[in-house]
Image 1 (cartoon, rainbow, N blue to C red):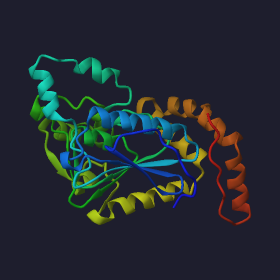
Image 2 (image 1 turned 120 degrees about the horizontal axis):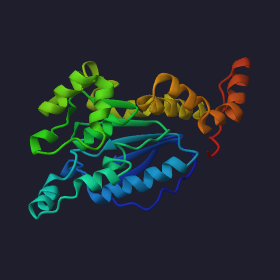
Image 3 (image 1 turned 180 degrees about the horizontal axis):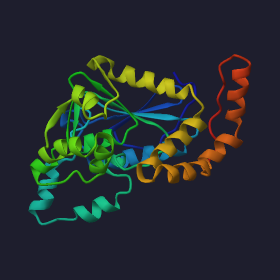
Length: 280
């Protein structure tokens, strides 16, 4: 358990903030009776806490999970229906202006690793959140869907390009154009966006094990590597290489203290003692 006391920003009880291991933050979506459907308040909570996490040098990895039987059911369609029926149609402007996407996660370009611990499953925007995570652990009974076309809407919060990039055009089309539900096993073996499938009781412990294996490495190197992965989503191999090599993240790696510690620890045949990264 972490020995440092952190002070996250104020947030509602729709989000539970905890610290399950050294350098690890865990955020639990906490509307189990509503299947953790996203609300404006939960979105704000996530935005405030993730912005704080991004600046907190002592926290290196975040785990996202859901309370109860489902990770996240997506948008609150009941409220959305009320808006549409009374003629309120501002989706294009609202979605485009939301720089971090659904739940302040689905389009967030965060250089710190994000792990999804998916209990039960994820639908709609919940699946779009999962697709923007770096590592996904799912329960054996978890199911995933992007069913927007069944409701006359679109998976517009970043899910379409992310799934196409991960699964390829044909598998992405199968899931997006039919709105079908897929099992965690298919999400792992066919579609490729789930890393590990475990018994339901082991979803969070497995996510914490992944987090611990990440924080055992240099946080400077991990964040530089994550930045390079983000660049590779939108740039050619050569452009991604050059942008990464001369980035602030790369300079911090090669001119910082952790590279010296890592190499010295190797020569001395001991485990390195990493320091929190300097602010960029």
